[in-house]
Length: 152
Image (cartoon, rainbow, N blue to C red):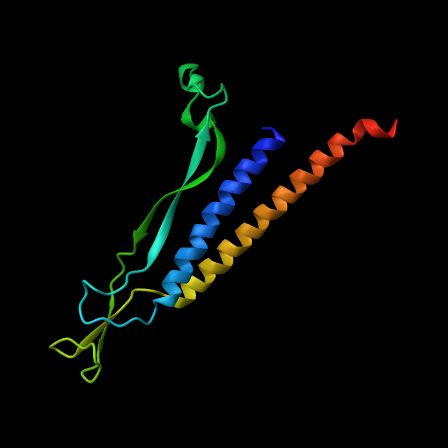
């Protein structure tokens, strides 16, 4: 792996963590949004990540033809495949005086766990910071390599 690939991989990870932070903040912003029916209530969203695989033989799929397994392929970063809604049960509260109460007096709230979302936000933020440090280290290494022959 060349140092140039480090920037692509770290950049894709930063982009993925950015999406993770955005979905988490959306979940937190809607955590206490009331609704009168289960069809209208906000549902927590989560991004689904997958590794981007680049074959070691070049761009043309030569690794598969050369007999390399999928596990032997080189990672080229991460991507967001989808953002899915959580299937965790919604919270139903009996609040007959609430303006959004249904005919039976129930109000429906999102399936957002605020503690879990805050932990997810801290994790995504730290992952983003780690990838910034990786990029800075790679940049520093490239600068040192460029100055190797100058001292003679």
